[in-house]
Image (tube, rainbow, N blue to C red; front, side):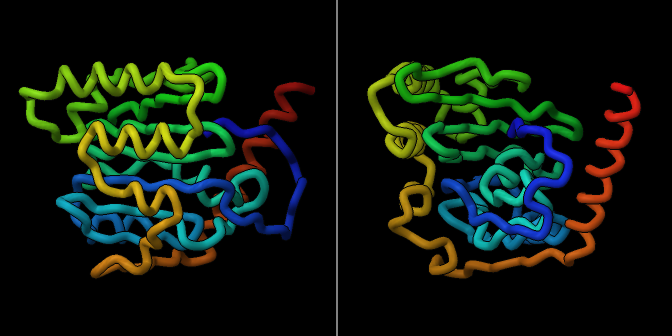
Length: 222
């Protein structure tokens, strides 16, 4: 997710997750657990209807603005063993769908819905094609065209709220996770749910990388 630049704001402060979100991976739960161990905060995963569902259940340990666990999960590419995958996120008032195509080095692509405007261009990010999202959902090829038309019509609606867009998209794509997105279900209560907390050194390394990038940026601007 795009973020505002900030050198030291919020150092030592952790924010709670703002919004809700899930990733649905076609890979095995073990692959998701391995990926989660190298992350920035606790993730919980469960096998649901043929998918591995992943959601943030603890704060991200990186510094501001990467301490938002939901945004951090939305913006993190999944590993190749987890692809293809789809992410569904409520970020503030926006609904965000993230497409992780299959392949070794695919480009992560985005659909972003905004109240009063509907589907908008994802500024600074590659846009996803709705038919590609439908294909990754695993729907039968005989109904994919109809589902793509229904999803496009839903995303044109500017009079709904983000939660309605996301649960509507899951319904059109016949995917699980609506209860987790609305807060009616906690992923930790799902059968076989597994929580993974990464070691603190990954967040420290991430912060160190941010510091180096900011120093390079400052030098280039001087």
